[in-house]
Image (cartoon, rainbow, N blue to C red; front, top):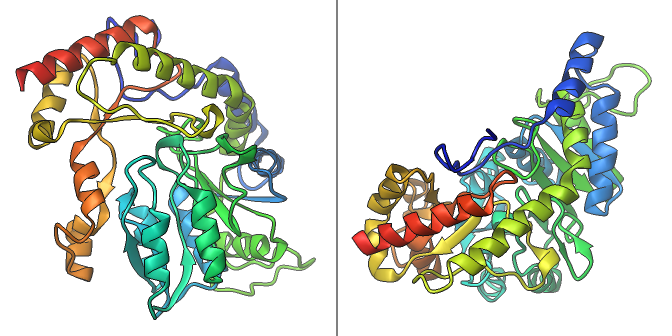
Length: 379
């Protein structure tokens, strides 16, 4: 029985690993060439092509991708970077790890992404904002065209946090090609996975070389003799991850189609329930890496109990993602409080992620619908 089948707990996510993936990893392990070889190089080139850019630099994880890209862009002590208030904490943490300060921007209801109007207000202040770091949430796009227009008007570069959005396209343009650079994650819950793993993509060869150096102890990637030109990190991707990534990337179109098929079932089955469903400006603009609905306001205080009821009914669910300014870390660092980011306050309290992966069947989706309906009625 495939993981996620209705007879088991219906899992939130299920890595799409098959026998050919295992064979690719096994072949690398048997070869004895385990780090920074031809598989990683090929995975970088193939991912860059999907993102519509010239260069890909594979690293150990998505957080490392963000960290090294920010450093390569020159972000350092005293610099500020505009980030959305609603995301995984790594989006803000990497700014802090560079010695900078994240400047939080409220989100907009439709996309869960950074609100370009609020961004314009933030960039219009006298703050020392050196970069804009928008997130494409849950496999869909933020309003990246408007964000780019605002950032360009203020002459501030963009680094896309496209961790969840590999393969998404808006107006024919891939996620990862809208800014000066972009970062992807290959964590186990992403559409394609290398277990952990990440990548920086860019059209800027100098930025790509700085990331290559930073990931590998500061080694000059273009020198014929070993020469260490930076105080770098050890954030390399392994060869077996590269081999797995290549196999996974080859399946990306069919995986996106599978997720969009499940989205279609949910759209049909959840109609009539008092939840707001995710939407996209066009079909190709959302890969549905995660499927996040919004609960009615009165239900939000009981979300934890609802998640427990779903689990009892055999359905794994969780929150959408995190209200970063209200985490203990950023309350302490920035003194943030409820009311500072009202849209994030609202959506973060109501967001619920339902199971979404390639192995879900329509019968599974019916079980999810029934469990959610019963859980809402019980609350």
